[in-house]
Image 1 (cartoon, rainbow, N blue to C red):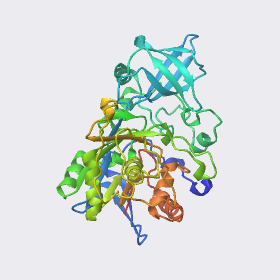
Image 2: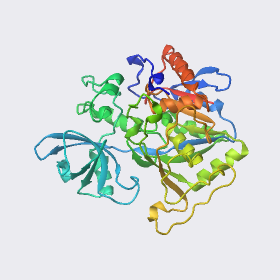
Image 3: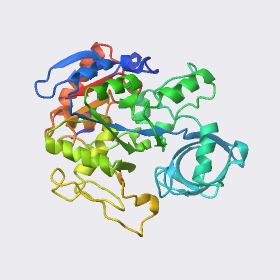
Image 4: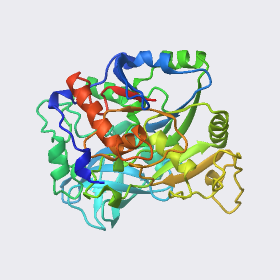
Length: 417
């Protein structure tokens, strides 16, 4: 399929720069995949679309303050976006090495210095990132980030009116090595706004720290709405996928099949996966909150076709909904990667038309950037096993534009059933 087929025009004023309060007062476009009918609602109305016995799955990953600013020995300013500790999930074993994106000219061997005696050395320059080594271990780096770091808001979210925020077409066409991160530093933002960002650029149920971008489909849920959903007989389950910078990076190949997804870490309780399997066997719906949750569930559901790198788990091929798999023990594995209660792995699954879904039956998602892998996943879900989903999605987006829906991270929502 051609990348250009996933393009659409969006008026600048429909890009949501701020959250909605209360969260569940955002708008909701409800889509029935079978009869193609749509309804215009508010997110709190989603309660009426749930049924007793449904399984609702959240991604509980929490965004950390991954952006920090330092100086080279020459005095030159450097901006870092930390991605993850090298060789483990951010919640994994202690480490001093991190994968990072760096804005500013650096080479292997360069030192970068930060306030409060934090230092690092650039160990290796890769094609799209660098490996850096701090003078503190992972635990202490996270403590430093919590105090001195910034939440890495998406580049299309404007805060300082004087900042020159690039438009989406400028980002996509930039020739910078890391075009999506070639953005203005928000050093003049008011503290009041920063505090709001720290809260609203998280889901209310976020727990496990490790993402550099939020699983935004969950922004619309409030604690009160979650209570009502549970009272209706819906079981809420949680998985963790730590969202990496790949969620921002544009697809560069005109043939989307040639695109390579970045690897992202996930963690799922064995009990959660068993409940998903049982629900499928019972004919109950699995409702996925967001593309990140979907990618984890479909990775487990189609692991023989996707790339799972897990030290302690493998779904038996062909038995996805027949038997509850058991996790084999591996005494040679690191303790935290061999917890018998968890499925721990990584995925680079790329979902696009005509993908056939194994696990999810309904999807809650936001309105996504043109030509994005997120848009491709939603297109695939609108017409599983076919290539017609992108045409339907673009029609839905056109309707949303006419109805003045808000787009992107802080924007409105879709419920596709």
